[in-house]
Image (cartoon, rainbow, N blue to C red):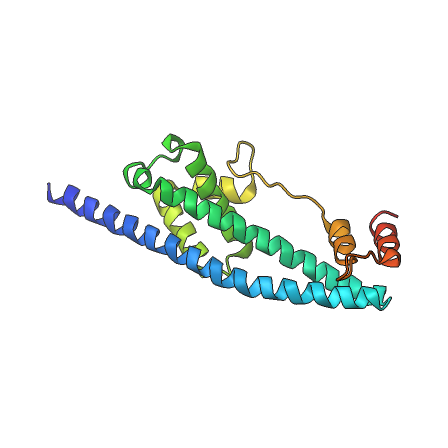
Length: 192
């Protein structure tokens, strides 16, 4: 009887720690998002100025960096969505130790956080802690399935190449007029 109560207390502590870390992750994402949005805004302005002054070769490296920042903002959106999905069904995580018996949305959110932790975990330290708590609760096999994207994995990557769109979008100046030389250069660079 005493051992079952001890196990219950350990699970309860792990449960509350997981919830606190997920809430902390949401706060960290908001802070990182604000910083990244400022960087994106400044990059957009810099690229616009370079394109308006026909300094196209100098705009390319900045555009690649801008594209990476946009992808990172998209990743932050995903992390926030995953956290919200997990917190919505968090009581089920406390009661269920078999990942296959959880709702599909919760499994996908957990798998998404594990996948993201393997890619950008250094920037958001809470991701690694949450990942280790999930491994402790649901096993190393679930973690490997999420990170390696094995057949039947729960997290699916959807990515599209928006570089041409970004460059041509930035090539429109403040008055809404298009910088035609930038558009021609963009299309020739990305579609030879």
